[in-house]
Length: 459
Image 1 (cartoon, rainbow, N blue to C red):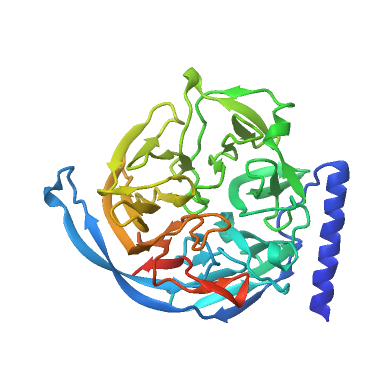
Image 2 (cartoon, rainbow, N blue to C red):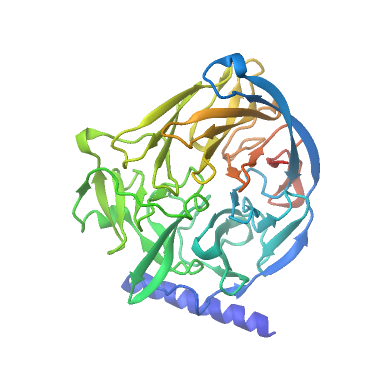
């Protein structure tokens, strides 16, 4: 009974604060110390697994194809760790792999052989979530489950307390589809208190008002570039970036509109509300409309690594450009990579990438269209980014590529977005879908079963 009382009391406090925030404006919440979350359950969980061998092409050390070679690599395939339509991966500095594609955080410390599940007391059915590494060893997650009565839950592993917490987030739009999350490292001084990082969560309608947390678990504030533009002076110039040792591990999925810049600042992409780029000021915690000199603009998706370099991925049907800038976007080194014959990518949510400057590598996962068979497949590129420009190292062919899978509600077989991650030793993990992955539950176990994405973890 003590646990139930504690959880209910904290939820009542959070709801009261949320109502106050709506009525009187934002409320700043200090970072950890007085942890506001209820303790989560960490339980053993089993997923179907098997070992598969997938082909790769190694491109050697020269631009010529003369030193290219074919090979195979073993992957552990893990099913049902996400939900019906997606997984969401991240990896921390220790090599722990997390998946919050569904209702709970699932993680493994041994490349998918065994799993733990971080669960709330609330009976969830089929959520969809987002997860990221934060400074100091914290792990931050948010999931939305509309099928169990509109639950938006935040999860946090508090490294200082060595415990998992969760909390209901009552303040959000009625339809908060597929939240995206970005951690921005500080430190920040907010309401007289110093916090090590802030967290932005973006749910539907995407690229509108963001939910905003200063403790990684309480989301009772909003941050809105569209509104801030009316009260801040526009900024112009190349981006001022700063090296930050944790940025290689804190990277969000490519769909997140916010990129941390390493200096306490962040860059938000244009959207239907704020139609220009927006720059986050770490001192005022407000957004200003930002333009680049000479009418320059950015396309595609953007990440910043631990060395303070910008990485820009632009997909163009049957090729992609990988660009690196070491001076805030003023100049770029571009590598253009053709996809295999008869392979095209729609880009957008079907592509994800990660970078790790410490390892000198990038990984790009793509859910692609196979022209000859008119089915979909999954490919994964690794690139050497140790120099000023990128060089392709390997191309992996993941899965059988024998299913026609589309994104969006109403599709018979869904693959809603790609997710990829890099281990500390340079191995990779990716989500994929073929005729062998599934079936998995949809809405609730045993109600409706169909093919769904799985994980491939390089061994």
